[in-house]
Image (cartoon, rainbow, N blue to C red):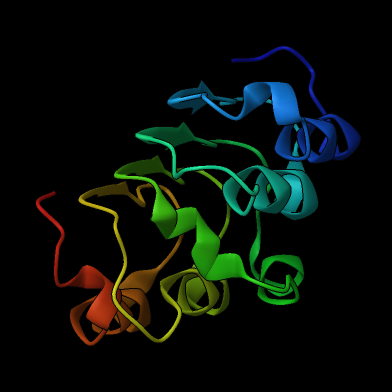
Length: 130
């Protein structure tokens, strides 16, 4: 957390074969942005048990442009808090199908009523415990 890891660093971490057995990754308070965080989430390895990318400017329009923004929900526990997702980013993350995520933190993302409706209507929310 808070190690000044930028988008390039997140991208390198996502593609690093030496991290193939990684179970948890906490990158809160950096600046990995949507490209770096997306690379970590979609890395070619078994899904993480926990992924923390709170406060990383993983915001709506750029997030929605990623090839697979729903990859964030491959981890069982995901912290996407304080990223400025808004409804556009949330829609991209929730995708269109079920997800492995069980614990999802979306606090401080200005989701409003539209975000609540997106979560309520998403198949990805079916397995959520919190």
